[in-house]
Length: 209
Ligand SMILES: [Zn+2]
Image (tube, rainbow, N blue to C red; front, side):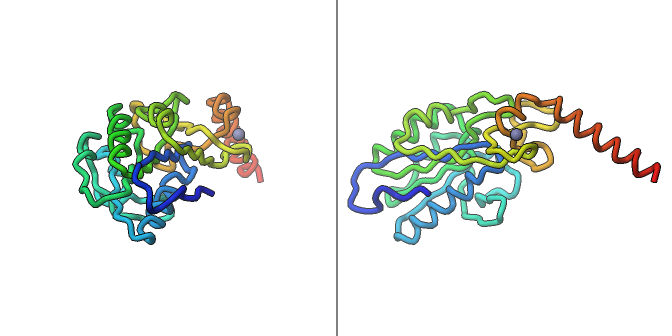
């Protein structure tokens, strides 16, 4: 489990990145760290991209309803306007921000701010997602969290999209994606077809009975 290197008496800031596939608990881990900072009486500000309208406009909401108030922003530049009293900045769904977020995070860290970023490291094609690879390169601390593969039960690193519709940015509704390990992700449609066949067979058996 991640432990803060230091809460107080430190003048320089740093960057932490929490990354992983969908359903891996990234946002829960972000909230856990932010709440601990609040317990240490540090002023915390949380941002998320405006594109993420899954639940509501204001809260960073994780899947277990453990939520924390966030400011929706349309550009990473807006983060530079953060109040001087703020010592910890949280950023959720960082993959949907523009590439300049890498520079913005570094600028904030140079001001002495602890920057905690959570985001998907790969998109549904298994490619690095938005500013995430750049953030991973410049961060002091990295945490890769894993989901469980919905097919074989191994650790899942990939977000497999069950629907062929839409563009790259499809927001994470549970029924559109499932976590998969590398092997099951590569097997892609083969597994889909097998599941459909099994379901069909079960249906036929039931109709015979
Ligand atoms: Zn698997």
